Image: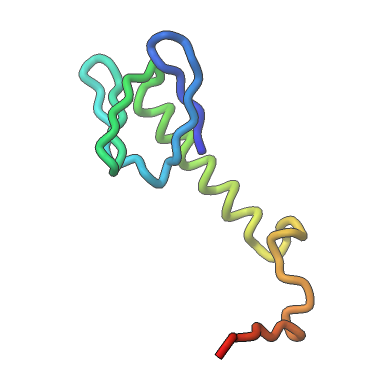
Length: 84
């Protein structure tokens, strides 16, 4: 999730995976894949930078040196049970 500021000054958190379009006409409009549109104060360059930072942070956490809760402990002993 990335934080953006709406025109009235309130903060809004958007799922960056749902962002489909960012247009600047001089105001910045964000269009999501579900059709919702938001008018925000930040320029497109800042929003894209936040999206890249968020994705990079997720990749860093998911790597082998990431946090412990992202890795499966004792993966060799993991045997899912299927209810047949």
